Length: 109
Image 1 (spheres, rainbow, N blue to C red):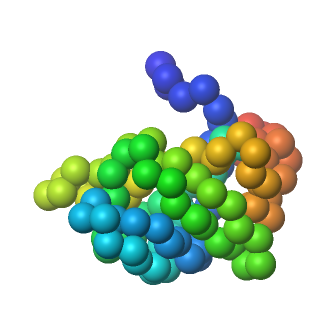
Image 2 (tube, helix red, strand yellow):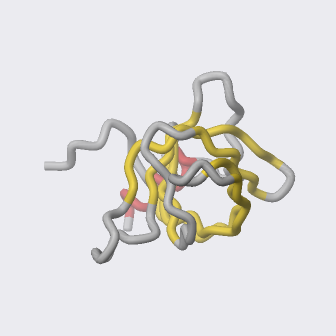
């Protein structure tokens, strides 16, 4: 049984991420979005380790918003370099994707 609160759709988007890493050093890098929901996303390709609870700025095309890191992939596992992020409630939806339409298409597949 899936414990997720929100439906997710696969995505292949490149984003720019910046913030403070686990050693409190400012960074900026590019990463890939693996999937998105109305509340957040999973990013992969994170080079700098970050901590759960950190606030990161994420930019897709010209849109940007702040997200809270919810989980990080453990080093040495297949999830290394992945993070789960959740949009802050006051931030805009930056993904140029209609989630309802995507979910309906997937449901018919």
